[in-house]
Image (cartoon, rainbow, N blue to C red; front, side, top):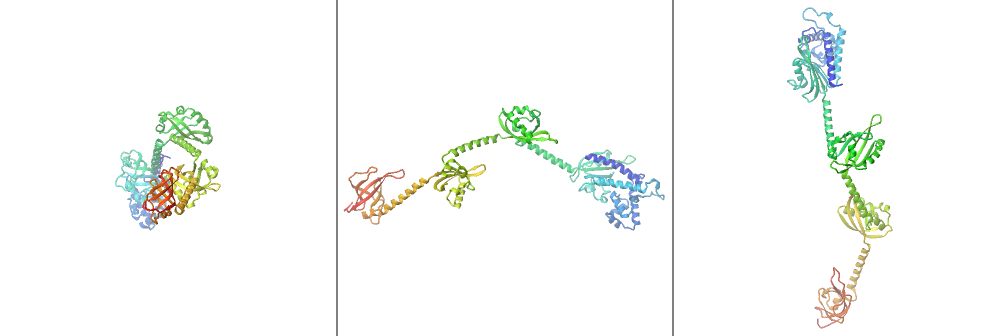
Length: 609
């Protein structure tokens, strides 16, 4: 039921109820605006109280009001509410009509024949109390009856948080004082206008506490036509206003999302031509076409599709009606003439009987994603070619766990495993390093762009091979991966070991051999000489390094040709002895200039050099 219907219905009840109440209590014959009713009621109340030997304090406590308020009631200064009358009757043990058995001024009592019977008056009062209960059961409804000075005559409220809850303390006070604690009427109150003009008023007003009300005010006229008060009905619509504001906010956010979102939303008919019934406003900004161009006609969007796409899309439409959803991709001409890749997500909406009602969906521009996908495929293809066809042993290794993710055919051939077998292994299965050392090498590889390592790897047949590994860190589908190029350097290492062995043997022969040996540079300066050579010259413990040799006599000539060994008599500066030697040139290299190996075969003393 609308708020206005509630207010109109209330005024119908109000007019009937007040007339019946006045007739039942015989107060309609009293002068309007006079305080006789309140004074007679107060006197009758005092008589009944004294007849039951009750003090004002005792009766006030039974009713639940203050003794001060009861005193004002007995003096005719305030009038009670229906609830207060009911409580007074219960406290005094009497029927409500007994409180209204007034006598007219003077010695003669009021004529009983002109009053309703006790049962009839009781029925009318109960009906009015029932009406008050009905009003209180209407959530958010407040009804006030005020006099011409805007003082509360009676009220009923079912508004939570209202200040009008204690009838005895509110009746007789200005409504703006009792309800809002103000010294003057509210700024947008309708009551002053009604009491001044006599014209009904209605509208939405905001109370000082910020709550919103739908209000209606009707004047109450005396028999002589003057305005004696007004009925003010207010329905609290704060909750509704809050919901409207929240709905407005949600609508604004939704409109913003539709206008600025990356997807264009639409709906269309669920029949063969699929004419659009709604296109979101961002169609223009996303695809360069006005939304209105699509409404009611399917020719427009079909004419902008890439040739051949229409037939392909329509062939798949039965899937939508079977499964209720469908995702398709196609190319669509942008308003600027370029072709865009579109992902179309469709949903079928059915009515209550299960028949197709409409299709709703969204377009998402995936052109950039398609370009990235194509570039990735090309990159993946190049990578696979380089990886799979390269003769260099290559492994892809999980940078965290050391698991072998992939291996090229060269790796499978080198290690002696099938592709499936090698992908089930880890670095620990092929690397002979202890686990802790291998973990440290993995950590080191993760922190460098490129790392060079030398390891020893175990093959499937148990052989151990020396390898040189160049490892680079890469990210593959969100996974940290090490790409390793592995070179078998076993023969190189074996050659190095042989060189080292020869060097050791040469050192042994040079130092401890049976002949005097010396190495000379191309100027015949001694680079190194063993102890036997020094003894032959009589040098003792003195080093010969740096001493100059002189060829005294050579039957074969000087200098020797490459690979030629000559015999000669050699003197060494500073020493008297001469040596019978053979001199062989050592082949020069890039890092080593020409040198000579001098071997002493005999020596003899001489008187000078």
